[in-house]
Length: 139
Figure (tube, rainbow, N blue to C red):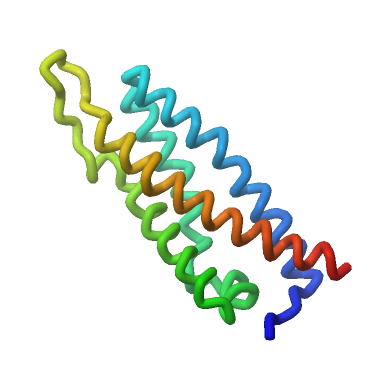
């Protein structure tokens, strides 16, 4: 049996989903910066924004109270949180090796951003939206 979301948890989900929604624009801008070669700006923005997501980890009491009985949701959250931690350390993780034209190679960054971070972000956001919808429909 799925546990009913309380009003306090529902209000948290509303705020949290809004925060997650704002990541869409940020991640899109980071991608554009990498494409344009503005690696330093993209790295700093990605790292700084993802630092703000660190408190929403799999041991966060509020998230556990909402999703703790859903193993699949908690698995998605764990995967997303691992990607968040990698994004925080993006500069150290990918370095500043230059290609033959003297530009920092962004291939690995773009692969991480699109194939891992954005993909897991979208999966996690879908879980949050679904749970928020259950709360809204029960009001």
